[in-house]
Length: 274
Ligand code: ADP
Image 1 (cartoon, rainbow, N blue to C red):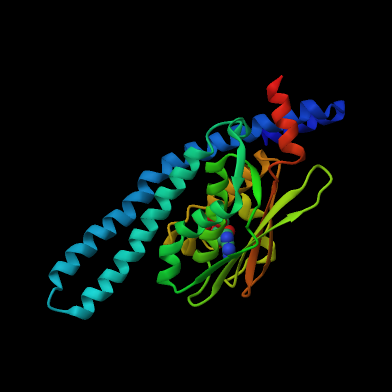
Image 2: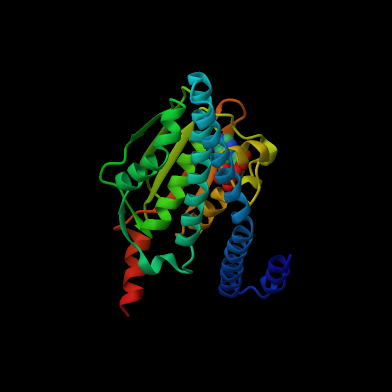
């Protein structure tokens, strides 16, 4: 409300610079609000899986002479552990997006390393669901940006692809260079064969805490912050994230980022040299 009001007042002045500064400021405030809300919620969110793990481990001990029950409880413990891991990961991601200007720490980042890290992060839940992850086209590509933030962004997209897909499906990560007016871009697309996203929700999923199906999201440790983080990282790097999806068939999230060694990267380096 406040941000819109300010923009509306500034826009008629025709000063694009002022408008940009105002948007920057509100974006920083937005992320600050995400962090505050998250810290307020997180202790509660963490208690749930920890409590469940404690009860389940007791149940395992009580059921030691019933191997089938032990297996059932162990399976549920694995789900709770995944949930806990996801929540902690989300905390780490949020701490990574704290600095206001990620490009101060920008460097050329190898796309194959980012992709390997993202795949690694979802390896456990993927193998539990027997989801195959495969990457292609990443060789020799470099993006320009903050390594930790880029890893958080891509990690979230791959994590979602695995979380919102049924067993025995495939998650593909494809990278390529695309020519653009302001310097070449690197496009990284994460494709799944999962539940997809209804048209009416496509715009809103990038808002913080917005979830198509809160119960399902919560069951996997989702907080509704992942895509807000991805969008923030993309925007602060001068890139974007878009979604293409058919409900019931799958989704593709595409991250576009400036390539290292071209346009934007050179100009930002020389401006720092002065
Ligand atoms: P969450 O923690 O709930 O995963 P996100 O911000 O990462 O939060 O995503 C917001 C919502 O967008 C999710 O709750 C889910 O409904 C939807 N979503 C995100 N990624 C996918 C995907 N790959 N397939 C289907 N739905 C998705």
